[in-house]
Image (cartoon, rainbow, N blue to C red):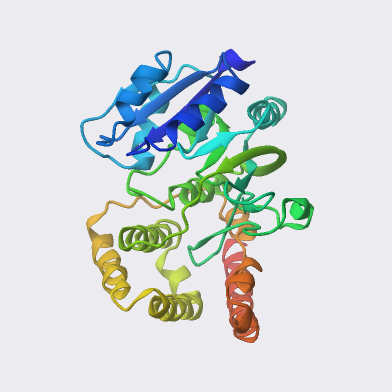
Length: 339
């Protein structure tokens, strides 16, 4: 089975992490093909890979084309039937690759995602797949929970771009990553497309990845997160949908703006910059099983937010109540329009 697997890694100034990532891959699945696409790093990443990992298929790009586009290019050069995508700041544990691949062999239309743990703590979850909210935001599933509680977590509605597995033919069938997402939310978009095309997303908790996760919200990250959310809304909702869900979208904008107060008022500039960038992007509306998509998106804000904002329990309760009323009405009207 290993020689049917291609592992895709996209690097950009990843010299501090790439050695640990590649060493873990070669140790645990030595016969798999490893394809690294470098997005014009200037910190020695390319030289490190050339010198220490000569058998890795290294693609050196002359400019940074983004995470999604880099992955798409690397997949075209990959020979494997099954694909594993993994971040350069992540490491595989034991036989986790095989555990992600086996379900792909056993069933059709499936994407697998591992339990991803934080590298700086013991047995603390980074994410177990993602939870995609109907307003376009994506949340880490079980973030900061103890790994022993993985059985209590919600079923993921999305994969984490940090690591997931998919058949190559299915990746192409879904159109790969949308290059409009330069960084962040490309995994959310792929998950929305997967649900729209009747794929299931399966968490494999026995497959473990260690992630050197950096939670810092930079201006650039905030811009790309907000732009990605707006692209998703434009891509998957028509005008009638937006009118029906207007209360929820307005509420979400108020929440987003209020949170910028915690980050710094200058983050508002990057939020509006994202809005202004949206009309310049060619966003293609998607077709498929919208009933399956809409019924798999989450409605409530996840419990992990309460761990971060423990004093806002009542506020979250009110927000979730508004979301539920509005979204249930939306599903009812959409169901009647289909029938």
